[in-house]
Length: 190
Image 1 (cartoon, rainbow, N blue to C red):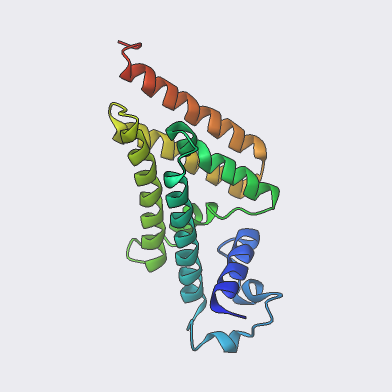
Image 2 (image 1 turned 180 degrees about the horizontal axis):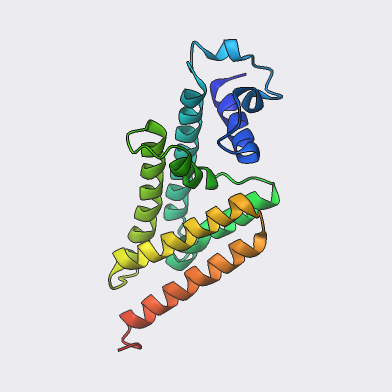
């Protein structure tokens, strides 16, 4: 099994079992023995770190593709994450939740996994703020924080419930925040 295929496999296992998964659970059905990992990943945390880093790169690529998609409006780009989450949920996949969970599972701010998760959360914030600035939203920093709080709340709920209704509700809330910000920009709330 190639490195990327193994990381994708472990990512799926992490989504199913959570960050408390044992190494045997992470390797289940992969055809890889724990001893085969040691030259590349000396322990479980090293494998989880590399898996989360790999997934963060996948998310960054997706964000760049959305940013460059000229067929989508800026508003659609801001809300595209919810559509992506809904598609993943239909496939029983919950990848974005892992970064939220990793900050709790690895609370030490000096932990590489915690720092990686914080960087991914910052990347998500930057994505929102950049698009809000393109819309010329007043106080785009605050609005981006509000939108990220909704997204993180949705991801946290998905870790527990796995209900599509939570995605729909979060998307509606994000739309409302965006509409209010646009009204404020246009003087409707003055």
